Length: 90
Image (tube, rainbow, N blue to C red; front, top):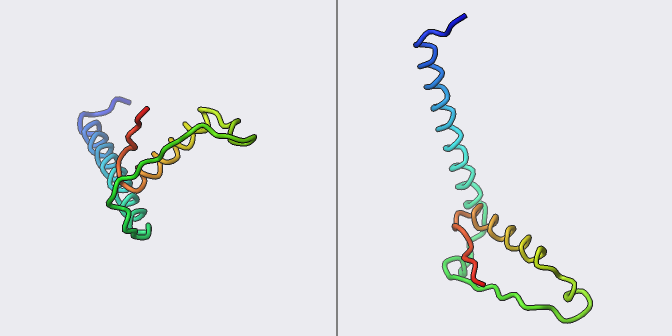
């Protein structure tokens, strides 16, 4: 059974409407998450995280992949809070 042009047009319209609805849902979820975060005076200021090589039995075993996982987690937190991406300086 062949589709008529009107069916294709309706399908395209439905896909666009679904895409817009999903984007709006993501936007509203981000607003909700931001509204649930407690306000802090330090929110408006930039921060610097300095990572140094560890001394001692536990810290000396910390690998680069551990730091990359922490960095990814921090970036996820910032994106969820609507703050953008973490600037990486090496």
